[in-house]
Length: 327
Image (cartoon, rainbow, N blue to C red; front, side, top):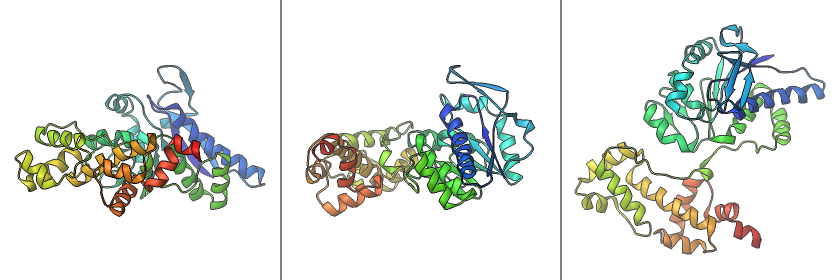
């Protein structure tokens, strides 16, 4: 039997505490119904016997205190809420315990922005990590030595797991169910909980909001120019010249300030504008393409799919209510 420890930190998001409990207890029930043994011992573990969440609206009663855990195979770190610096300070006593369990052989999985607490342990330094796309800029600023992969739903490296934003952590739960049981059980769980199995990217859900929390005024002006001239064909050379910065210096400063190269930033701004048009208008793909400064259909389709994970047609069909109403 595998021991599953679900931490209950202060400022935790309740759903990300209860959902892994539901998943693994649900799998236990499925196994019992099939005449098999229960596979998991699931325990809620905290710094106190009662943890109030969501400004006191809910109280979670833990099964064990942190020091009472004798054995664990898998530790879940739920998503945190509110100010991250404050949440990490409130939960700093978890950090040495998480490191200790990992050194003893336990695997550690963070859900959504629980990645902030996992990263605080230092275990993710030099390793890949995923979190909610909306927290990517803040995460990079706080943990520059962690390799954040914005679009990934699941990362796995040496017994450390992270997941993408919000409900996408259900895919990590399924992934771990399969690892700890088998494919058939994971498929059964995916059907029971109505979760699409093997989904790997959160790209279609990402809304690009350029990193402007930096002090480089020249780069900020270039960002604003790009965003205000979506329909124009903008080159890196022209941007550097316009703001009187040498091209090599401009590219270096831009990457440092925004975590994107100038070309990547231009592409992401244009594709974000295209996404909005595809979501809300009846314009053709070609019309949208021209409006965001692309004139080569293949190039537009390639960049769009690279950034969103979907073709322009598939994206429109998925998110445009007007298109759906016509179909």
